[in-house]
Structures are given as C-alpha cells and as structure tokens.
Amino acid sequence: PLINLSKTAVSIATAFALSLGVTGVSVAQEFDTEFSAAEYSDAQLAAFAATYIEFAEIGMELEVRMATVETDEERMVVQMEAQEAMTAVVEQADGITVEEYNAIITQAQTDMDLTAQIQAQIDLIAPAAPE
Image (cartoon, rainbow, N blue to C red):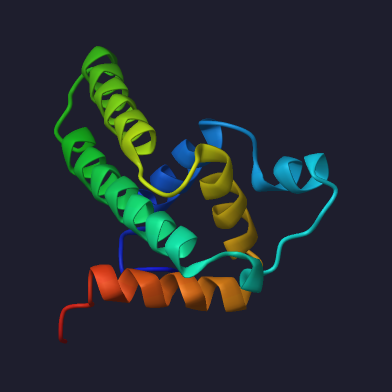
C-alpha cells in the first residue's frame, strides 16, 4: 500500500475519490491515450500525495467514529460529514483536478513505477515514523 494506513482508511479514500468524478480509465479512453508514470509531473504527484494523505486522514477519523456509533442514523450522519470533508479537500486542492486525481489513483493500482513515485512524494510530505 502507499502509506502505512489501515486498509479501511485507504479503501475509503480510494472509493470516495473514484466516486467524485470519472475514473482514470474513462479519462484515458476519453483522450484516447494511455498515461505512464513518466507523464505526470512532480508537481502533479506532489498534489496527488497531499490530497491522498488528507483523504486517508479523514478515512481514519471516519473509521474511529464509526466504531462508536450505535444507530444507522448516527452512522449516516458520520458518513455524510466525512463525505463533505473529502469534497472540501478536492475542491480546495491546489495543482490537481478531480479527473487527474482519479486517473492517477486508478493507474497506481497497476503501475508499480507510478506507485513508487507517489510513495516518494508521500514520504517527503509525511515521512514514516521510525520503528
């Protein structure tokens, strides 16, 4: 995985990102091109990494809050609050669009070179804690 986060937090961040707009696959098809890791600038990958980290943090908070809710209504409120927070992250993201984010996260699932480049950007922003 990209950074050392719970699988649930990463899944939430990924699923939400993909739900915000078109998927990377459809972006590539729309432009009739395939992207490679070399085609993303360091600035785009840095913006992606910053957004990814924020999504993951919201996902971790959601996971903690969901463990304490008792009713479906409370669960729905917590999910809506997380969705609103993630929407705000995307709308305020500097240097990356929703479509670019989705294209990168989709491609990173199968492109190990791209995943390594993203991990390097994440490490610059949020270095792993020493073990």
